[in-house]
Length: 237
Ligand SMILES: Nc1ncnc2c1ncn2[C@@H]1O[C@H](COP(=O)(O)OP(=O)(O)OP(=O)(O)O)[C@@H](O)[C@H]1O
Image (cartoon, rainbow, N blue to C red; front, side, top):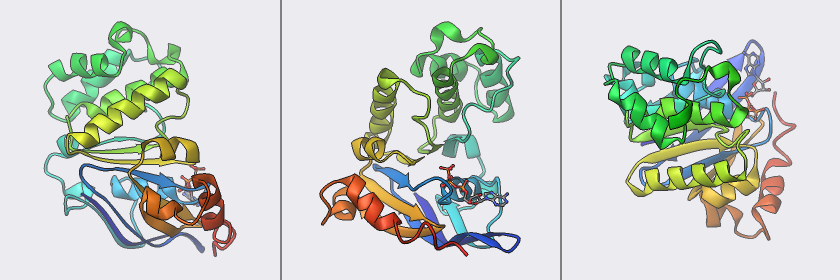
């Protein structure tokens, strides 16, 4: 389980997160939805130990990321695409991640296959399309066969077939008991895949709960999203 509790973040005098609290549960896909600049990446960076909170906690199975004994086997993540150097091949990049994380080399071949890049393992990352880069980022996230996946805007750059594919992959992961937390600013994408929804705007949680509860009283998710985020987006202090 991923547990975010009372999380606040300030950059100088600017508050970018205020008392953010929500959970992402095993067996569920949780969509973390908000407009640009709402605080999604800031929250996920803290959860993944890449930034420190000003206050509050962000825990993975009850521990901060930095205290996980075996992080890559616990949580797989993708922030900002693949993070691979352009001059590396996909296979070299994954082998490097596997080595650093103490994972067996055979996992490289397995995840390349899993994300549909089996034929592109020896291609330099600099020649990858945006969608291939997303697939490579996902391959790295899957390397440790983790129970939890934390993905920042995973459908960015994917074509319709790629979007359909990633939906299936994330659905299967949750159906097998895994926890999936994915951020997006695209309502339609989230509506297609999420079981639970967390809506953030202006650094504050505007709504959280099962998808149907969050959109109850609104004709569509789009209408709910604008109603929930309209007041908050301008309220950052
Ligand atoms: N290092 C920083 N210094 C100052 N402000 C920052 C810093 N990092 C993020 N911010 C600000 O925090 C706010 C939230 O940014 P964040 O990237 O978390 O939003 P987001 O919801 O992920 O948006 P997007 O969908 O555009 O990526 C933004 O206004 C951003 O400008």
